[in-house]
Image 1 (cartoon, rainbow, N blue to C red):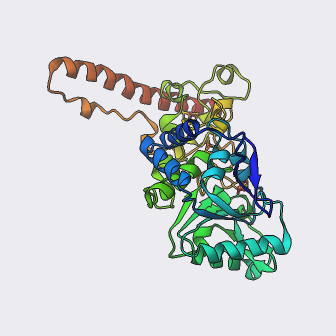
Image 2 (spheres, helix red, strand yellow):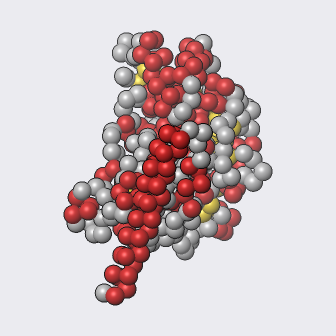
Image 3 (tube, rainbow, N blue to C red):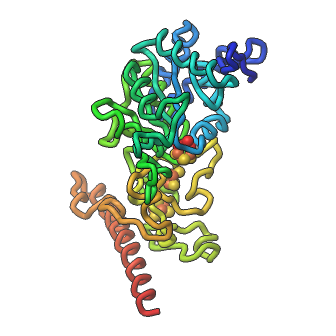
Length: 371
Ligand code: FSX
Ligand code: SF4
Ligand code: F3S
């Protein structure tokens, strides 16, 4: 699909000749909705709204970051999220994607804010430095703090994309030389949806924007502003290597037999047990296994404040209560003897698996102590 550019060089949608047809467009919207746990009807509504010309204005701010969040959004394929987003919203300000610069782009920002006051979505990418009044990140002579406060003050919704914008991310790593924080810390008292990840998974961003545009509401959020549809469970809860954890089969070194056989990466420092995200079921770029654990690397907890850039990569994760299989012998009560028998077998097996995992881990601990 090609892009139509406005006079400032901003992408505003597909060219008429080579764009997707209506059927494909609606289908792609439905797939995107389903991918983030929303009913397909939401996708249809979104497509209808776009066809009626009801494209919400999006003002996208860039501060301290690597631009990986935008890059990962542009690298998606089926359905082309970048295409969906750029077809369905009016991207009125985005420093990376705009050909314009300087006064021209600053003018575009002010025009978009004025024309869509109270209705636009403010997307924040990157951390905001607070040290020395915020002088370490300035655009057009204004600090990131000023720009964010200004743009957010008239926005209908504020979405922080990536870990940098969510709480500070890499720029805030110790010793945090610029006192970098996320958008929620600057906009205290304002609801900020956070889509952490380094980079953020584009589908989680799309799901949030899609719901807001089609239904006028934000998804249910956790206490850190993360949409529950994406961050409601830990990686460990739906990890494809979980059976190995439960059975006590661990990779001990990169390239050892366990690693080659796809065993659990806990002993190599996997932070999946304390990291909330949906990477295992929503791989990057729609490529199967295109996520850290899928390619044999432990999760480093990139969506979790206090884990990534804080805990050493090789350090073992803190195991929460649900790290072990959830079925407990007490749950075996059942109305029928047959069902009770089956549940008993299952319960016994999984409790046994949990015990096995913990036994294997402690055996490992003793081996290490004695070596
Ligand atoms: Fe931060 Fe986004 Fe990490 Fe980079 O820009 S979340 S550094 S991958 O991409 O903000
Ligand atoms: Fe998966 Fe990591 Fe949990 Fe092992 S510790 S099951 S690799 S999330
Ligand atoms: Fe990040 Fe861990 Fe997912 S490192 S991409 S949260 S598997």
